[in-house]
Length: 70
Image: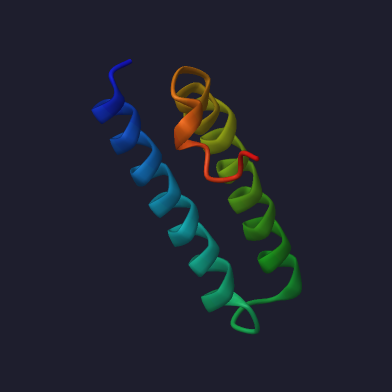
């Protein structure tokens, strides 16, 4: 994968994670605890898929794009 494509995937993936996190912040105390837990689980699963199926692939080919890398 070329660097520009990797950068776009990373940026869109991070935006998607931020949007999903906002869903949880906005729903807290606005739905039942049961509904919130279901949505929280769905958000967690979605973020996990973004990490493993998109971000990990990007970092494998372009390690310098790993914001968490040490």
